[in-house]
Image 1 (tube, rainbow, N blue to C red):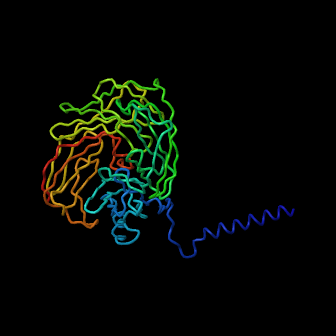
Image 2 (cartoon, helix red, strand yellow):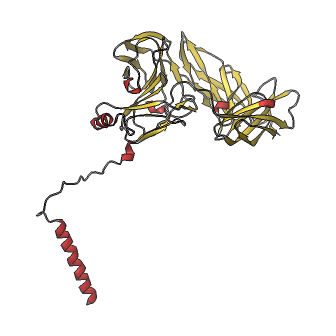
Image 3 (tube, rainbow, N blue to C red):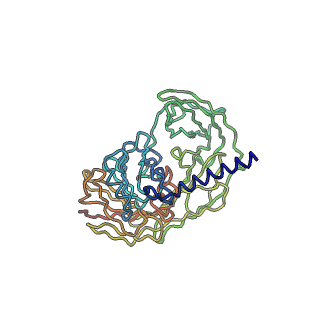
Length: 418
């Protein structure tokens, strides 16, 4: 009976609460939306500004909402000049962050008088690559390197570095200069002994050693090497596919151990000719083909390949041929697929240099006032770089995004902006 009475009490209390909640006699509150509320974190846009494999500090980063999204435009106008606005800058590590960014936007990056614009971006994390590569930088140390056993009289030795903190190396074994991105770090030193007459395509011994380096310091390292089995080799032929009428250059074959900035050219090979490649286990191999015609360039990009393959194809796109320019409105470039990058180099050092990346047929001259520059005007040299394998502007994201894709560049054209 007690259990039944308790149950009845709870049931009555529940009914009272339910009726109280449904009571409409009091003042009405505003009805709550049944839609899921927007999470402020969903609007955050962040990333790093890159030039090649290097970060860019102190760059102005500005997000312009895609026209037609009214809420994004209202937020931009309300927040200009504030910490949470659509204009920010990259920190010493090249990082930037906009807390309340638009969902669709054009990203403009200014470093000094160079401006890169990426049209119609939607990514919340984006590492824009702004133009050509920059030399690796960081802390440096000297390494006196040697191998055990010493190299044979007919051979030579070269060194590579790798690891998460390694950037590059230069110089000779007696005074090898290594570059790394932490004041104090561990990196891996690779030694490849090779036939001096043939080159790095004929490695004879290989070894590696983890070493400790400190900025401004000096250390010595003796790398124990093991003989490379001559049977570990590949016989390859490279078949580039240049556009009709383009003159093909010799192909460059490169090798590295995981850090592209330490890559070395190990051979120059004619298209279709047999190439015997001795393989240093752990090495990464790439090949690049370029062809030219009347100032235009077709490039395969750096294509990684399996050294035990027998054939390697190298697609090479043609440059854009249908393009026009209107001094007031902007540019038109008809690409069959992928993105194009309009590159504008001023005749005067006082004018800003421009790069505009877009997947659209037409693009306007950008408004640079929000990054603190006047409208570009005067004489410029205009080229169009097309990347058919990249579908959107934000595909140019990351340290190697410009190295490993095929592209083509039109012949330079003189124009006048006004």
